[in-house]
Image (cartoon, rainbow over all chains, first blue to last red; front, side, top):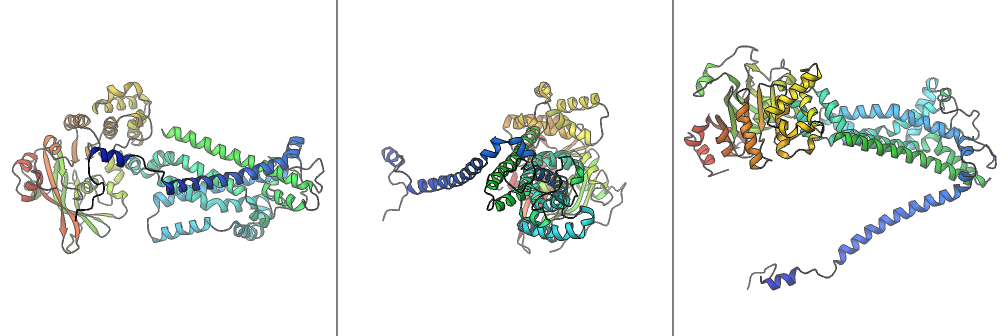
Length: 318
Length: 290
């Protein structure tokens, strides 16, 4: 019996015939179309959400945009002084807390884990736990915040204050900051480190001059995205005690006394609050939609900052 | 498996081993490295066993041998680059100019300032050409004034035969250079801190023959000022440029069933290539194996 051959007889004519494009690769096509459909579904849902929210918010946003941004919480949706300033101030300062606490601590911990920690069982145990912490539901962090920062350390934080909320959310995003920073540091080529050591750099010089500049774009993207996630969280803030109902004062953005005052509001919570109120006063549905648009713009601005910083540092990286 | 005991902590200072000098014929200059019973382990795995040889001043010493024979491992011991691998462990004696560099009192950073390294893959920093060269002098605090630094940069690039090609674009990124230029930049970067020894780990393996020839010429020029130890896969290169050659091979250890690097023969390069005393060396350099 003739030996089985893959291509058959090898004349030029047969080769030409064999290599001609066959009928369409059906399975490949189906796979490709399936992927496209999944993408379109995600985009469609996102588009519907945004359009729906913007349409609902249109009246408020076009009617009195500056009034809505500077207004306060009111009991009636028709109140011309209704607005989100208190919540914006709260979210702004919570973001500041996250940036000031979670970024340096998280980046520092990641540098330690990647560059200094011995690669032993203990380190792996720590890293495993950090990964687990990143997956803990945010409500659990809310409980931690309530018991630790609101109750036990209430003297320092002012109880149910922006400070308590900010520290709680900083802890919430800390594991994410550590993990993304670790990944950015791990991507630094070994050759760069060896090159720096090779001309007599100390470990600190090597990290400062090679590792951090190279990892900076990744670190900035990761940390700012984690911030976006943090300030969108409502659940922990509800536990830490963002007020419901009316907030007495209407602090300005740089009214520092508001930080540990025993009452605060934040964007995600005001949205929850207004959606709840829309049952008795349908006008609050529009206000909630407008607040969502404001929060979205806030987050988009922050992501834009992340992209800008990443590009800036990538250019510097050469 | 019999393991060599670590050398009882040698003194810092004069400790020339007469027996060692006698073991290598035709020694000319001062000894730069004295290696005796060097064992290198990665965890439990022994990568190099009982290597003993001497590197002399102002010579090019080549280390050749098949892949996995431990020559790069030995090279990376010379400037304690193996310290970067947490599980690596070095036993035996390794003196650099009579200083036992694995003595706990020795600062590895100071060792690396005196023993520069050029790597297999060109690894310029993602910075400008100028900053690549200036990095070492800066971290070593060699230049107080900008003009001094400028001088070091120009001199180093000149010695690496790169100055004329890059003098008009010192501020451009080093990543825009060709592979051969990048490797010469790395050589310039290494000599900018004025080291005593230059370790080169297959510096030409990623380069074309023209770039390789330029680097070989360069090595011949700078060996009057430095001592060069080079790992190469290219036997012709070792024969062309080196004064002495160490031939390593990987030997199967029957007790552990692992391959371990072994220094088979070390001699003047002419001897290794024309009249080796070990059959394994002869088989390798004549192309019968490896």
